[in-house]
Image 1 (cartoon, rainbow, N blue to C red):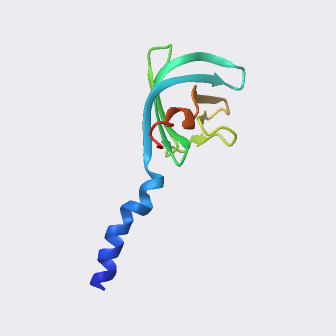
Image 2: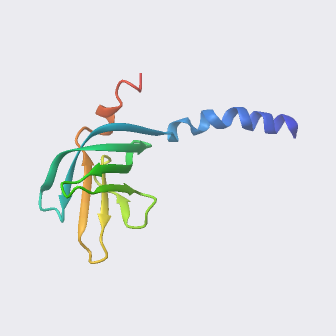
Length: 112
C-alpha cells in the first residue's frame, strides 16, 4: 500500500501537466450578438487550459473590468473557436470575447 501511494504521489504532477493553465497578457476583440467587433484590441489577460480559453479579464470602454470564467454558469467556451468564450445574459443577448492571437500563437515558445 505504501509503495502504491508513493507511486501515485510521484506520477500525479506528470499526469496533470497537460491540463495546467497557461496565462498571457494579450489583446482581445469583444463582440455583441454576432454584430461584429464592438471593441477591438482591448488589453486583456487570458487563461487557457488544454488549448481552450477558460478565463478572460479585460477593461471595457465603459471603464468597468470584466472577468469571465467558464466556471460561471453563463460563460461557456465557444464551440467553434478555442480562443473565445461567450457570456449569455438573462435576456438571451450574447457577448463574445476572443484573444486576437490563437492559443498556439500565444504559447508557441513555451511548447518547445
